[in-house]
Amino acid sequence: MNETVSSTTGVAYQVFARKYRPSTFADLIGQEAMVRTLTNAIQSDRLAQAYILTGVRGIGKTSTARIIARALNCIGVDGNGGPTAEPCGVCEHCTAIAEDRHVDVLEMDAASRTGVDDIREVIEGVRYRPTSARFKIYIIDEVHMLSRHAFNALLKTLEEPPEHVKFVFATTEIRKVPVTVLSRCQRFDLRRVDMETLKAHFASIAETEGAKVSDSALHLIARAADGSVRDGLSLLDQAISHSNPDSFEEIGEDAVRAMLGLADRSRSFMLLESVMGGDVAPALDLLDQLYKEGADPLAVLEDLLEITHWLTRIKVVPSAADAPEVPEIERVRGREIEGRLSMTALARAWQMLLKGLGEVRQAPSPIQAAEMILVRLAHAADLPTPEEAIRQINSSSVGSAPQGAAVVAASSLPSSGPGPSSPPPEPVAVPTPPPPRVSNNSVSAAPSASAKSKQDAAKHPLVQAVMATFPGATIEEVREAGVAPLKEPEYDLADESSDSGPDQD
Ligand SMILES: [Zn+2]
Image 1 (cartoon, rainbow, N blue to C red):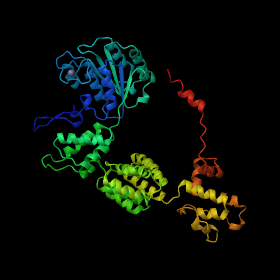
Image 2 (cartoon, helix red, strand yellow; image 1 turned 45 degrees about the horizontal axis):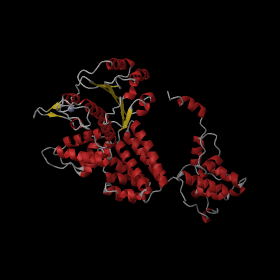
Image 3 (tube, rainbow, N blue to C red; image 1 turned 135 degrees about the vertical axis):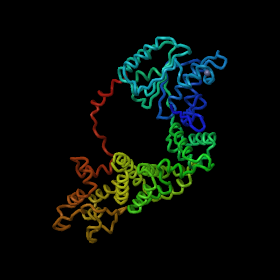
C-alpha cells in the first residue's frame, strides 16, 4: 500500500521505512540485549508462550514481532530446519510472512478492534491447529487498547495456550496492560536508538541509495528522529527525494533545516542569548525573521528548550561539551552563554519554555504565542529569583525595618536609609509593579520594625503571587519556605491506597 509504481521507469518505488524494514535479528539496530535473549531462547528451545514488546513508536516493535514469527516458523532452505534465530528468508514461511500473507500468522490492531468479540474470534481460532506452519502466531499491536472484558477473555487462553500457539503483543503504553497479562508474557523493552547509531545507520542507507548527504544534515535527521528508526528513515527519504537526483550535489544542513522547519542553529543560540539578556526588541526581530524564512514557531521554541537543556548540562558536567559527537557550535557558543547564566535562570527558562510550548500548540496564532513567551522570558531575566526575593524579605525582618524596604524597592526610597551601607549580595531591580508605598506618616513612625517589614513584604509582587497561589498562607510561612525545605503536603493516603491498592489480582 506504500508502494507506487513510477510511470516513467516502471520500477516499484518503496518508501525507505518499508524498504529498509529489518527482516532478521541482525538487521535490528540498537536492540542488542533483546536480540541476545531471544537468540539464546530459540537456540536452547526455551520458547515463551507469549511475548510483549514495548517501546516508543517507530522503534521496530511490529518488525520484531514479524521476525519472531519468521524465526519460529522458518523451515530453512532445505525445508527440514527447526526454529532458528537466523530465519532463512527464502522458505515458503519466511516469504509469506514478509509479504504479510501467511495464513497462520495473524496480525491484528487492538486500536481498531478493542472489543471482546474481536478477542473471542482469536480465542476461537486458537483451538485449531496451524494450517501449514509450525506455530500459529497472533501478533496484537497496541494491545493496551483492548477493553477490560477483552483482556479478561484473553487471560484464560494465555494461562493455558495450546502448544501450537504463540502470542506476540506490542504496545507503546506498557502501564496500561494489566499485570495479570504481563505476568504471563516474556517482556522486552525496545530501546530508543541513540543518535550516533541512528546517524551511522542513515549514512549507510544514503550510501546504498547513492545519495550524498552531509554529516551535519545526517546529524539533524538523527536528532529529529528522536530515537525512532522509522521516523528517521522517513525524514531521510524525504530529504533525498527533495533533492535533484541528477545534480550529484550533496544534501546539506540548510536543505534539511528548511525541510524540518528548523531555524539555523547559530541564530537559535543568538535568540536565546538576547532573550536571556533581557533584550526583547532584537529577540522579536530575530524571531520575526526566522518565521518569515519558514521556521515553525514551535520548532524555534523547541530549539530554545533544547539549548537551555544543553547549557544546563554543560554547567553541571562541563566535560560533556568535549565529547567528539558534539558539534563545534554547540561547544563554543554553549560555553560562551552558559558562563553568563546562573543555574536558577536556566531552570526558570526551562520551565517557562516548557509551559510556552503548550501555549504555542494551543494558540490560534502560534507566532503570537511564541512572541509573548519571548517577552515573558526576557522580562523574567530581570526579576529576582524566588530565593533572592525571599532572602530579601527574610533579611528585612531580621535586620532593621527600613533596610528590608530599601532592598525590595531600592529605587523608590530616599538614600537616607541604612540600605547602601550594607548592600544585599545581589542587588536586583524589581521592575515596575506597585512600589511598596511607605506609610503615609513617615518611616520612623512605623509601628514596629517587624510589623513594618511585614507590611512592605506583603506588597512585594512575588509575595503577593505566592499568597494568591496559596490562599491562607501567612508571610512567615512564605519566608520559612525559602529557608527550610517545603513541608510535604498532606495527602489523603487512605484514599489513594484504596484506589490503586488491590492491583495484584
Ligand atoms: Zn525461512
